[in-house]
Structures are given as structure tokens and as C-alpha cells.
Image 1 (cartoon, helix red, strand yellow):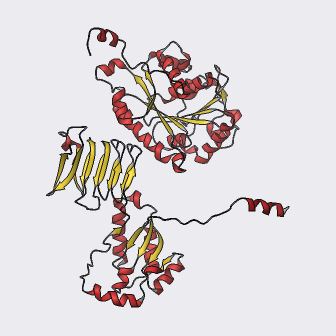
Image 2 (tube, rainbow over the protein chains, first blue to last red):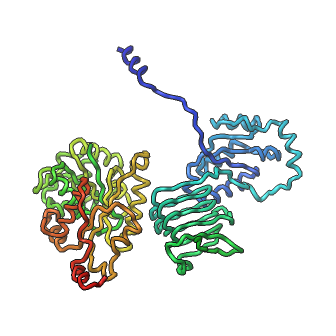
Image 3 (cartoon, one colour):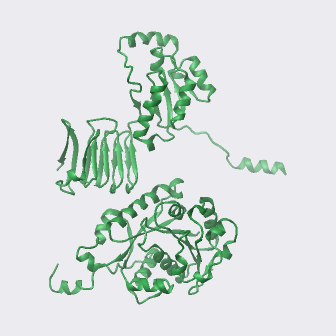
Length: 251
Length: 269
């Protein structure tokens, strides 16, 4: 009887290994001040909660080690978990940090670990560079891949793109689209569009029919009240020039 | 395989229950075994529109809680023996609904029925969420006025992102537009949004236009789905809707005002 059962299992595949590539955010730490790290992280996350919610993170402590700032990796990982991110890996750690990470079942990327010899060599190069103590997290390195949306963006929906955002469909009133880079809407834009949300003042918005509730580039904005004179159904681009938001017809 | 249809809108008072009753009756009349479920727990209405309020013993919540089985709670319609009604509970609230419970009831119904029509409550909270969660098709009921269109748009966003089909990455819910309480005369005089205005915002597949009609109120008060009033314009419009849903091609009616003919004759537009 039991033999028969085994036979059945042999017929059907139970599991399979496949190799696959994923985009993951890398969080580079420049300071060992845990309080400041937590504060800055929470600030960043509050700007795009949907984007960061349960987001997997690879922790990069290489810079920190190069500057010989000591950090308790266990406390740091717990802090990152505490703000709602999922650390899935550590890179650039020294032997002890790697050991600590492993004790929390966090995989370690050995290819970029800071062995002491490597650190010695690179330290010289870094020591001449002025350190910026206030800037805790200088940047969050993300894939700048373009996000493409081909389903209508309905009222109440929010879309956040870490790079450029291209939308082929209409964006309804009451919807919100945000990108760290440029925004292209090849249809009617009735909702809110915010480009360069992390402060990129060179970001632009392009759309083929501007009827937006609000447009913003790097925090400078115009509401539909200011857009009354725009002819609808004309393709336009919006960019920043000397602190002013310029709306220009494309054709 | 049963097809689960949700009749939804976001906004209240646009004609969801009237539509649910009419299309459920229409599908059953055309020979498909159909169940219609009232998801408006606490504000039970469907039983009135269907004229079966005197025969309610057990309800949807009783079935979810295992206090009654499905056959005890289903009420067979008096006009059509292929149509069954599962009424909502009037004494409870939406919190009595659970995602697992609703799933179980729908699964059991799916064994026996061809179409399951879910009459969604207004709003986007738990009742409306659970009514659409398991749906295969959505009838979005919209009135030709701005707030109704905006709410429908919001509901379409929820259908596209929070349904079971969306969560499992399956083929998305098929969305259809039903424009109800349409009055071509008022559209012409600019008091009401036109079909084009609505479609510019929603761009959906139009299943039908239901004209504003006295027969709807009369039918509701009598407890007879308006589709059975075959002489009324609303009844005919709902019959068209059911036929189109089942794949028939029928031209859209009730878009033009009746006076339009004379005006055309005298060259006005």
C-alpha cells in the first residue's frame, strides 16, 4: 500500500530549481547613528508608503566600514524591519558583521565583502573626501527601469515609479501618479501628476491632453485653477525653468 | 462553470438593486439557472424588488454562519422557476460577512447555477468589497451625473486591483457599463451628461442605456422586476442588456430624444 503511494509521488514533479533575476533596492548606510538612520528612513518611507511597504532591501555597509564607523548589524537589521522593510541580504560587511547577519538568517553577499586588506587600500582614497555627517542616507539606489502602465489609472489609484513612468491610458480625476524621473501620459491626464518627487528638477511631464488637477515637478506645482488657459487635447510638455513651471505645446 | 456577476457602482441610489433584479430575471427567463444574492446586509432591499419579502425565513448570514443550509435560505421566484433569491439579513451589519464565508457560499452555488448575480451595497467598504471580490464580470451602474461617474471610476480601480482575479494575477474582471436613468431631453438641454461625456471619462464597453422611466418605480413598488414589464422602455432596455451580455448584437436604443425627430426634420442640428 505504502509503495503505491510512493510510486504516485514519483510520477508528479514536487519541486524544481530555477534561476531568476530580481530588482531589489539597495540601502547604502553612511552613518552609524541609529537614531538618525531611523528618522531619515521613516521620512523617506512616508513619501511613498505604498512603494516601500514590505519592500525587500539589501543592506550595504561597505561605505561605513571604509570609514571605520562601527555599527551593530543586529540592531540595524531590527531597526530596518521595524520601519516595515524586509532586509534580504547584507553586502560589504566585515567578518563579524557577516556572522551577525547569518545569525539572523540574512544571507551575506561575499563578493563585495570588505576584507581588511581591501579596506586599507581604499581608505586612503576616501580619507581625502570630506565627510558629510548630516547626510545619513545619501541615496537609495534603485533600478531606474521605466515603469509602463497600460491599464486605465482610475480615481483613487496611486502609482509610484522609482524611475520614469509611461502611461498609455487615461489617468482619471482623483488618481495620483508619481515618478522620481519623467512622466509620459499618451492619453488624457485628469488626475495628479508629480514628476521628480525625490527632487530631480530636470524631470519633465509629457502628456497628449492636459486636464490635470495638479502637476508638480520636484515639489513646484500648479493646480487646475492655474491651468485654465491650457487648450485641451493638445500635446504639451511641462518643465522647470528658473523656479517656474513652464507648460509648452509640443506641436 | 458558473459565472459570477457583480452589480456595483460606488454611489447609492443609481439603480443597482433594480438592475440586479432585472438582469437576474432576464437570464433566468432565457433558460439559465440563476441565483441573485443581496450583499446589502442591514439594508435589505432586493427581496422587496423581487416581491418575495413575505417568504424570507433564513438569509445569507445564516448560511455563512452555518445556521441554515443553502437550500433552506434560497427562495424560488414566483414568476420564474429557474431564478432563486438569497436575501440579506436585516438585523445584522456588514461585519457579519467574511471573505471565507462568502467564498464558501459562492462555491456551493456555482455547482448548481449558471449565473450568480451579486447585488452590491453602495460605498467601497466591506460589503461592496466582498460583493466584487469573487466576480468574473462587473456591471458598473452609472447615472449621467458627475459624482456618479467619479464613484464608478473609483470602483473600477478597485475591481482592477483588489479582486480575487487581480490578486491571483488571473485574467481581469470583465467590466461593462450600464448607464441608467438616462433622459435624452435633459441631455439635449445640457442638464445631464451625455453618453459621450460619460464614456470619455470611463471608456468602458457599453452594455446598455436604461432610460429614466416611470415604469421602474411602479415595478419596484409592485415587487416585480421591471424587465417583466415588456411594454415599458426600461423593460425593453434591460432585455437588450441581457441579450447583449449573452453575446447577441443589438443596436443601442433610447439615446436620442423623441422630440429629436421633429427637430431633425426642421434642420436643427
